[in-house]
Length: 252
Length: 230
Image 1 (cartoon, rainbow over the protein chains, first blue to last red):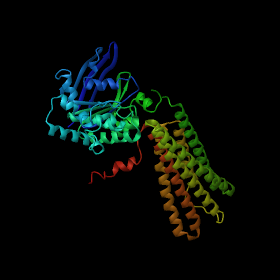
Image 2: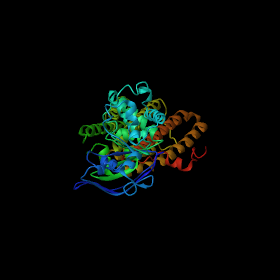
Image 3: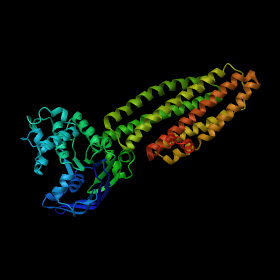
Image 4: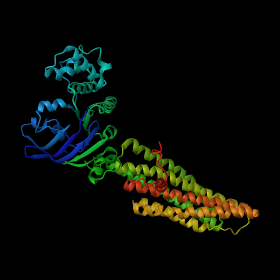
């Protein structure tokens, strides 16, 4: 099951560049939360702080508190453990090109020392079913490589790979921006199904997509979170003029 | 991403609706004038403007539909386009009511003048004032002005009820005046509808400007919640 994320006074830097400033928000469990804002506003940095990927950059720094299911991820957990609990899907699908479909999904588990063949088979099937890819690849699991799939299938393969390690949170950084409309709608349908089991945070430039898939939406601007509210409120009658100006295309 | 073309399209849509508003307001004023002076040439003008109003209604709906499909508007822009679509329909019906009144004026030509217990000019003045104010609130995006229109509707409803009571009494007690009374009753009903359309327009302006849905507010305050009854 998904867990809630409580962010308090989060600040992040790249060198001297203060990219996130005093972010406070509660992301509800088992919902999809969308983050929108112009390029460079800090939304991708924010999601990278939630799975401790931001600190992998040597000049990056983070202060503040992030609680995932009550666990303080910067005080009480190792980055590797956090990245197992918090899966991530990127803008461009990045399957391991030389690995089979099966091995792509099982990669995370094998890295964690999983070797029970029967259990691995079950998890691979379940993950591919959960990412709505099973029916399309079940006959070629070990015959075809991840790179042989279409772009949309590759992205669902990456989602299956993230789900295989049984995360509680799924971060998606523009997961459909490189996909055609049909593949995009499959990913959106998938988000709808997945949020019953996982907490989903999706960064998107596509505001219609945010409106379609997310219950909550946050608007970031210049490293600050300007507004966080129900998606309905943000897209029909936002409280802040800057939010309205952005979503109506008056600046950005 | 400043969407200059889209903003210009919204301005164009507003302009088109203002042309429609001008025609509808003029039609209702002419219909009232035709009634006051019993002039059939004014009725002809009302009929002609109704044709123009109907054509414009289709053009505005099409322009709004194009913007919804092509631009995926959000927030205040989305509320604006939805309001335009609804105001457009109300203005077309104001045009219909104007034609209904002018049709009654035509039929009155065949009848003897009668002194009836109904103040149509006063009712017409109030309904026309509601239309004028609701359109002014749209032009100026003024939700406060729109709210003043909502408070005027009860007075017109009251006049319509009083007209119904007094005119049905005339019909039953002075049957030779029944045709004139029936005509006056239909005109009162058309004016009451005009006031309702002005109220709708004012409600749509409030929704556009402030995002508040104030429709059926009084009725919903007193009626039981159907969901609570389940």
